Image (tube, rainbow, N blue to C red; front, side, top):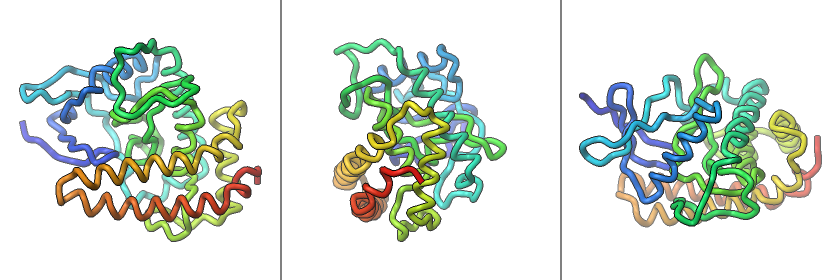
Length: 255
C-alpha cells in the first residue's frame, strides 16, 4: 500500500498506510504500548490503538480520523470553548493513566519526575491533538511519555494552548498578559479546581528549559532537513522562557 509521510509532534518520522500509522520503534516502545492499551481499557479511547509491528519492524497503530493541529493553527483552536474542551480532555487522559502499574523494568524515553501521580504525555500541544468538527477528540504521539506530576504536564499544555508565549512568537496570536492570565484561569478551572495555579506557573520555566535542552540535543543529531527547523524552534522557546521568567509573578495571580 502507498505510504504518506508526515511529521509527528516531536518531528518523529511517521507514515500513514491505509488506516494505520507506522513509525520506528525505540527501547521505550513496549512501555508506551502498554500505556496506550491501559488508557483504552480505562475508557479513554481517544489514543491510537496498538496493532503490532510491520515487516520492517515499525510500530503500527490505528489511525485516528480527524485533523491534527499543525501550525499555523486554524482560528477555532484559540477559542475559549476549545480551551475548556482541551482542559477536560487532558483531565480524562491524566485520570485514566493514574493507576497504570509501573516497575523498574519500564523504559521511558524521558526521565521520571517526582512526585509521579500520573503518566505525563510530555508534549501536549495542538500538533499532538486530533480535532474533528472543531472539537478535540484524541491525543497522539506518546513516545515522550513518562511518570510525573500533573502540574508538569499542565505547565506545557498551558504554554501551548493559552498560550503563555512572548508576543513575538510567530506561531501564536498576540495575547496580552492580562488575557493570558484569564485564559489560564479558564484552562485550570476546566481541568479541576484542586490543581495549584502557583505550582503550574512555578514549574513553567523549568518545563521550558527541559524543552530547550531536548530540542538542542535533537538539533545536533538530526538530518539536515530537520536540523535548521529545530534550531529555529529552540530560539523561539528561549524567547518565550525569558518572557515567562519576567512575568511569573503576574501569572501567579488569577485575573
